[in-house]
Image (tube, rainbow, N blue to C red; front, side, top):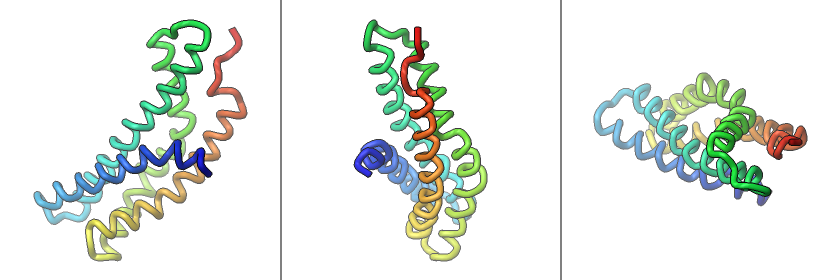
Length: 150
């Protein structure tokens, strides 16, 4: 459990903060629940993946830099592959279907933008992390996160 908290905690915090900031800014410009939920969704994803991308980049830099100084293009390529393997399928379902419905539904059901977004986010995160944790475990066990034999 400590590993998952260390891995996903920081991006989750940044994603939540950017989600709520975007919702508050957008809420000051429009009363459209759909627009507020979509701006929150996009900002949350940007915040989350900014931190998660840096995390995976650092992991790959360390792995590829064991013997020699790694090439930047190699580390960026490996980072992209690892992010796609860990989050690609999950994000497809989450970002295009599950999360927008749950964020919008949370706002409608609770009647408060902040409370509804947080409730919708928690519901979406439970499903997201079950799938992401399985994907991470599979990619780790298959050796995708290690340096391939040279």
